[in-house]
Image (tube, rainbow, N blue to C red):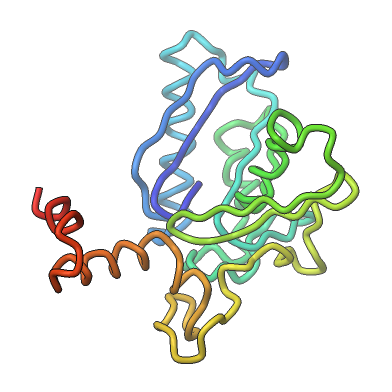
Amino acid sequence: IGATSIDLAIADFSRNTLVRYSEPALVREGPIKVLGRVCGVLEKLMLENGLNAERLLGIGMGIPGPVDFSLGMAVSPPIMPGWDCYLIIQTVQQWFPNANVVIDNDVNVMALGEIHQGEGKNVSNLIFVKVGTGIGSGIVCEGRIYRGASGCAGDIGHISVSKSGPLCHCGNTGCLEAVAGGPAIAKRSLIAAQAGRSPFLLEQYER
């Protein structure tokens, strides 16, 4: 689950991807709507591909906010109103009771992917940085994800980098995400285009 989309994949235990699917979705719409859509789509994908939902044994989910991994809950996520301490695992298991469900911060999940199948193979220590709608990092220390005491260890997007910077949606001023995230870059690009400082950008926006 991302800030502006949901992305699903179904795999077997040989790590073969059987199905992939993506669609726009706003995490700000809350857990009931978003999780309902995720589980409904997953159920539909299973049915369309001749897969038995009762044989779905594991579900791993990444969300764009800090997670208490031991409890499987979001903890004060800045861009996820309504998700704080919401029972995500229990909600998903109502749809798929035979599945072991785990959740983590989305960038931690990406970092795990890198150390298992990507550039991080055979690397003990790395930092994976994601720049999209938001900015975050996954920290791998001695081959394990480092989450910190409250699951916020990699949440670099809400570190203030400019005291006079723009207001962030988390309520603070000058956060890295508000300065250098995707929407911030797009906004500055549009301003540059409209001010005539970039004919190329203006042409792109007028299409």
